[in-house]
Amino acid sequence: MQFGYTEACMGHDTGDRHPETADRLRAIRQQLARRHGVEYVDADPAAVEAVTAVHDAGYVDDLREFCADGGGNWDPDTVASAGTWEAALASAGLAQWAAERALAGDDGRETPFSLGRPPGHHAVVDDAMGFCFFNNAAVAAQSVVDDGAAERVAIFDWDVHHGNGTQDIFYDRGDVFYASIHERGLFPGTGDVDETGSGDGEGTTFNVPLSAGAGDADYLLAWEATAAAIERFDPDLLLVSAGFDAHRHDPISRMQVSTEGYGRLTDAVRTTADETGAGLGFVLEGGYGLDTLSESIATVHETFDGRSPVEDDGDPNDATRELLDEVRAAHGL
Ligand SMILES: [Zn+2]
Image (cartoon, rainbow, N blue to C red; front, top):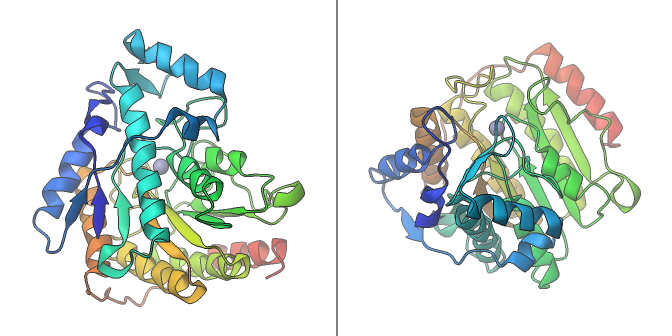
């Protein structure tokens, strides 16, 4: 894969006791250094205008001033430092890079993956939350629509948390599809099956709130339904909001996805992108176990480097099957 990486993302300092630290990117780069075929690309930061295309300009100004004053706790979970402003622009710019490269035809071993932080999917139109300041995937999706590179974009979010910010930004939009598989009941508490979009966006929001304890087979079954909805939407671009906090050893969730499971999920997502003719790019979200985060990303990379994921013979649980009947019914699938 081509990994987008920018040094400015290291300058977002959340302190010593926060799970979302620069050590995450250090661990990923150390792990990727042991793998074959890894390429790094630097990218320009996002222009402020690209950010205000999805965020309220007053909020963006407030954040700039907050960081210029040295930062601090924006809310109890979400911490900024003097370097956060530049890191947030860099992180959004990396996501734009991934979207642009995917639409330019980079695929297979050239598939783009942006390694930005802070993450983005909780950032709503007019506020930061959940460690997120700018909604990187949303900035990227909006910018390729605005510059005419894509007419329709699908964002698939496999982070263990629901991407409430991405959902909110595009809730009434018919040209951006948002799908999330997440753990029900976790922060921020949104993402029910009946949140399906409104107005022009009716049907373009797709939520699969799995029960705690779901593993590879549950995620793959959830992806089958999600893939059917994405195929029907027929996007030009499929962006994956790729968090790795559903891993069975991640410290902040109760899900049971394995490292190999991320490889199988990647393989399934790639197949759907190929079949719909959509460009495919990845944007980093969460993932807080340094080993599980870095090994899972290396597994995603190797899936594009020619390695076939190992099958396992687990079955989805009954609660997942029932949930997916509900999801399919809500979307007429
Ligand atoms: Zn998360």
